[in-house]
Image (cartoon, rainbow, N blue to C red):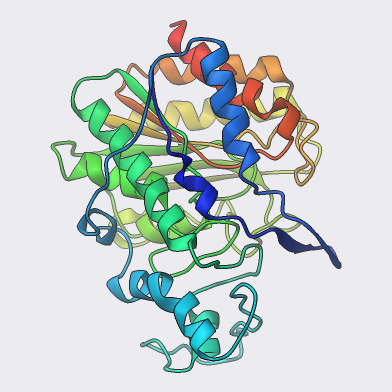
Amino acid sequence: MKTFYTADHHLHHSGMELSFGRIVETFEKPERAEIVLRRVREVGLGPVLEPAAYDRAAIERIHTPDYLDFLQNVFAEWRAAGREGEVWPYSWRHRSMPMIDAPPSGLDARLSYYSFDMAGSITETTWQAAKRAADTALAGADAVLAGERAAFSLCRPPGHHAGRDFFGGYCYLNNAAIAAQRFLDNGHARVAIFDVDYHHGNGTQEIFYDRDDVLLASLHGDPDFEFPFHLGYARERGAGKGEGHNLNYPLPAGTAWPEWLTAFEDAHARIRTYAPTALVISLGVDTFKEDPISQFKLESEHFSTIGRRIADFGLPTLFVMEGGYAVEALGVNAVNVLQGFEEV
């Protein structure tokens, strides 16, 4: 299996985050990608390739131009305003406040408009890192389109919390969504995104909620208690043409393998019924029992089974790296999925 990776991911590093009332070292740090890459090489998974640089048009198939302009330019605006440090939003719209239909003009107002949390900041080179993560996803999709059975896009920063015009949850560009659209734009009529990350992919849901050419199935911590909250309930099934094409499996804290696998198999069957012609896996391995910011109880060997069951679809498949923060086990768990897939 080809792995697409670029050291340009180092261009983004927030350094810190607010976690339950404390300022702590961020859990989403550059060493995550390096640990996975090292394991890819240790097991001889396949060649590691640098992704090409794609033009912005491929990203604009998912994200709005005004949002992309904001990401590219906001750090310079921050400095021009005489501010030091990294760019952080600090205010968000409450449900009692009316929606606005265009970005506001003020810097802080736009930071609020284009974000939903402060899990990650914007640094001088965050745009470059996020753009290269999107390139990594596109390169993987193009490899599959060219005939590879599967490919692994080792993206960082991750992407599934980013929506059409907002960032949050460590995510700035939605790599999995960009890849899914790449498949659709190059001959595939229906694509499924199977999100096995512990946290709900609220951005991916927002992007495809009213569409029937992408089926999203997501297994995740119940939004009643788990980030990103507010979205990810089973009742959210899509809208308009997308009705029935959004499948959420919210699971309780402490979910172990038997219960998780039951939800996985139900989603697996419903994806088969949808009959996609290509598959994108939002590969989060923060379902691991020792993950510091998650509450499921999967063991390392379970990730191999997940990979084998994904292979049973028999579809052109792209794995896109999302979360996973138990850094000592991260490489083993992520690559176990890929090796399990390769066994079938």
